[in-house]
Length: 325
Image (cartoon, rainbow, N blue to C red; front, side, top):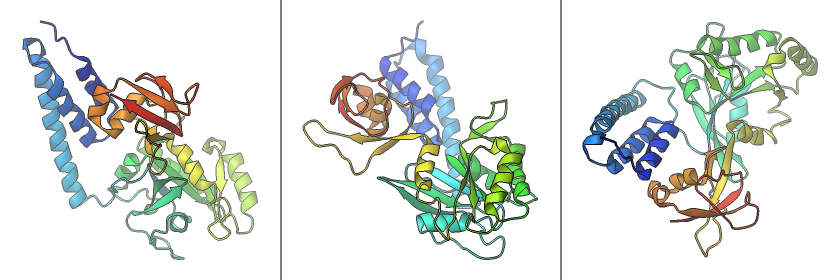
C-alpha cells in the first residue's frame, strides 16, 4: 500500500535533514509524526520515526547530564554563531577575546592561565557573535574533552604568536593536533572521517619587533595556511576589521522580518546559513508559518522592491522579508 506522504510531511522531513542539533532533530521528527497520514501504508515509516525519536531523546538526556556535570567544554551557543580562539600558551588569544568582547578572561604573562572556556559576545554591526577563549593547545595535544568543544563550534580562530621563535612549530602543532583527530579547515578535500571546519589564522602581537619578517617567513614555509591576519591588542591593529572577518567566516546572512502594512524590524535580524530559502526563514520565525506559507515579498535581493517570491527563493544578506500564509 503506498504511503501517499503529504507536502506537510515532506517539509517536516526536509527540516529534519537540515537540523544540526539534537533538539532541532527531535522537533522535526515530532512534526513528521504529527502530520504523517495514519494508515497501513505508513506503518513502517511511523515505527522507524518512533525508534529514531526514542534514540534522539536518549541522546538529548545524556547531553544534558554531561553539560550539568562533566563536560566543562560545552558552551551553550548564543548570538549569530560561536567562534573559538585556539592557540598555544601565551599566543595572545585571551587578550584578543577580552579586547573584543569585554569578557573576564585571565590574561597573565605565564602559560596555562586559561583552564576552561571563557565566552564573550563580540558585536558586529547589528548582531552579536559569540567569541570563546579556550585552554591552550600544547605539544602534548589537547586537554581531555576539548576536542568536543572544537567540533561543536561554528568556526575557529587559530592564534599564532608572530614574536615567538617557535612560530612555525606553533602552526604545525595547532593544525597537527586537530588533523590527527580528523578536523581540517574548510576547503580541504573531504575524505571519510574528516570534519571540515571554517578556520581563520591570526598572527598576534604584530606590534613587537621582527614580527613582519616572521610573518613573511611563515607564509613562505606554510602557504597552505592561507591568509594570516596580523593583529595587536596593544595598538589595536587589525581589530577593527576582525568582527567582519568573523561574520564572513560564519558564512551567514541577516534577514529582517516585516509584517504587512508595517515597517521592517531593523533592530534584531534573524541569521541563517548562506544559501537558505524563504521557507527556511519562515521556519526560523515559527514552524507553523513555514507549513502554511504561500509566498513572500522581498526587499533587497529581489529584482524590484517588494517583489513577490516563492518558497524556494534564496535569501541574501540584508533582505527584508514579508511572509504571507
